Length: 433
Image (spheres, rainbow, N blue to C red):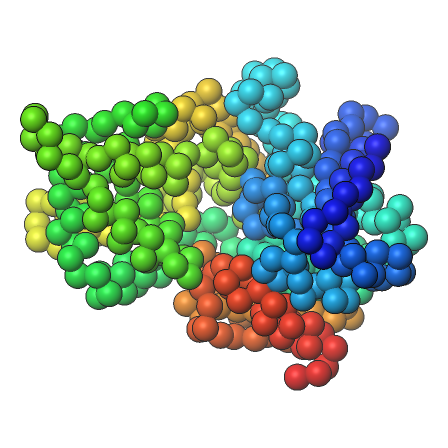
């Protein structure tokens, strides 16, 4: 049952859909999808074109906006918007430590999760589009991993698209996860250097925190084991527009004096727990590397293996010398499933996915080279999450794609500069720039 209600300036409708778990077997098991339709109050009765938003991740549900926040206000001038919780996220048959045991053991859970990549997400979109648009194509806005989905859409079902808008999400078309991380670690190192240049006092703070963790390895109030490697992974903040500042403020409150000596403050522990826990988005950890997988080559814990090629990221070796500690970024490691209580029951499932060798291709380079759908992509010049070199190489492989390369925003540009970013991309697809 679809339920409509109002927020300031908008009318919302909660929609539910049933789609096949495996689109190759439409008569088999089905799962439920959730999406929220948003339309401007003064246009609710109009026949507007649709825009479907695909969130970054993988593993995150669509934004829960209030009114016309961020880019949504600009979109509502032209479109009726569908905020889709991709399968396994939000209200769309969530996949987590509580629900996955319904599938059976680790092997069965991994087989199930193999259907939660871009290929299945796009087929979900095509399954629900005719009932919403009357068969008309719609515009897709893909942020980060949502952009990966958009490129898959152009590869497999371009007839469903009137335009594609991509923000920080042009994937490598044929690179293995190893290639992605081999490009990522030097990029992250540059971000860390920029952070220390801004906040030189954080060099000593980070070393002091890691020294404490190597000696004590505390368990946070929610059960998270805070290791040195886990603390380093807070570098994921450095890919956001305000991330360097957030990391700085976090570290400055790390210690308090107690009768037993210096200890990690409750405030620090509470914030770190929230930043590191995958409880709200476990699918991110489970299928993150799988979103790059194609063919018979396993991902085999790519980020962990490739990290060994960059010994400067080793925390213990750093403390033995006098170099600044390096943080890491958007990567998932085997230890992630040991430190996080939300992931520990899924360690064997993650191992099964890392060893998997039967991944379907995600991108059709011949079809992309013959593309006729208007496409525009924002490429952030020093994006920490998506390599701009890989992105621009992909851009050149998609016929007619127009890029806006900018260093004005970080990876979250569609949030930080939403209306302006969306306005620019729409103008590019309409040949107004």
